[in-house]
Length: 266
Image (cartoon, rainbow, N blue to C red; front, side, top):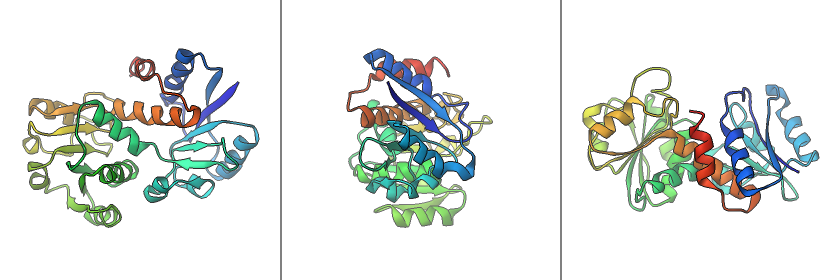
């Protein structure tokens, strides 16, 4: 039986186990997806142990995405993003990947959003914002990174090809001509709040929120009212898992089964 899993601390809240287990059941694979919660100073031993025990693949979550970068052979995209969220143990040495970028792009494309030549505004310069910014730039988009601390946005913009930066207080100008808006912050998760003024939204936008609890954030409600295309955070969560599944197994993921398992728990 093949073993895959998630390593992080904490991991009890994760929706990855039911999503991946649904994929195994749908395809009749003899596999299980389990969770591992090592202490912060035990991550190197945990990765080596997983490799020695024959674990096929691991997803990586907080607080280990950066720590793991130094413990695996990271691919070019993960190295640029500066974080690993997926490890593949099938080769001679563990390889590190970041499926957040591809997950975001697949979520947008699934909603018929054309990314080639798109003007995109990314709110947030943390882990998710970094991954999505690199992904959209690589897909042929022009990226504006907006962050509460503008110097942090500037640092990321210096790394992402062709990107520029803004403070959160001045979003109206870049959004006026934007095609895509992504909230890559946690704003909207704990309270009914949004990082983007409603009057800056318009009907030519595609708006994706990385927050998936709740599924309908205030940002998405405002975007729908403005006539924009809306993409909730569960789509990005789904497709980063789909990317990991396909990387590990070499099989086309049963997206519908994984999506049903995910949304039934939200």
